[in-house]
Image (cartoon, rainbow over all chains, first blue to last red; front, side):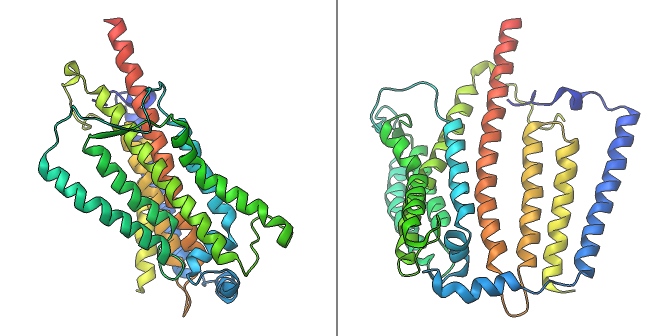
Length: 254
Length: 97
């Protein structure tokens, strides 16, 4: 499987010129790397003005962890666009055909090992608690929406790998779940305009609460989108492993 | 040799390795891994330069956090396209037989 995935112009037999080009490029990249290292060694470190500004105005941000403050207050535009990027990828990877099932469908035909079920029963609640903890602690210490979302997505992927449940991503509820993070973010960004005159410019008194609302919604959306990504890739790969496709030569052919 | 210099050098080395891989490895999956390696190199350099005397600059940290999520999304999309290319090749082979 996957052993034909080579761009044709690259997969030609190596000639003497191509080897020369490869060698020259390797030397060039090596030189580039050493120049970068030299510049890092010789350059004076700039004074951390931006860091100082960020750390000085942390009391206005509503949270105590500087990274969360930068992510969700000072430069929340980045985070907004990042959630939009995740949503766009999820839309691109949506399944094509609709299975006419509800959001979660039990798949009772697949037998499941009792040990696996036991493990799932221990691990999933723990992951949910850990995720909630990471989300909450993001205001004071390293943590936040993305870490919490990743842990939650891990729990979801573990549930899907047991193959007793499957999700229907085309249901309206699933789509709403995926869009929730971006929607809440945009709504909050818009609702603060009357108060402060600018989008995403939270009033200092309510900043903590607003950031928490955004983070909860973003955590759920991020987790759901990550589950969709992994699930779709696994489904697609499983579909492709057909009986006549077993002469796998691995990736060693390049 | 200070600690952040070691991190910087490692990051630049990873970036260079990944750059070479992106340019000269033919297999798409390997190219994708190479892109990810060079991206991780960039993240490492950013994190290493975030350390200053006394203060840690939160802005590069936030940038790297954003970058990781975008890199994951991009990698997933690339894998998805790769699998689709593979499917198409299989169908074309089946038709030509």
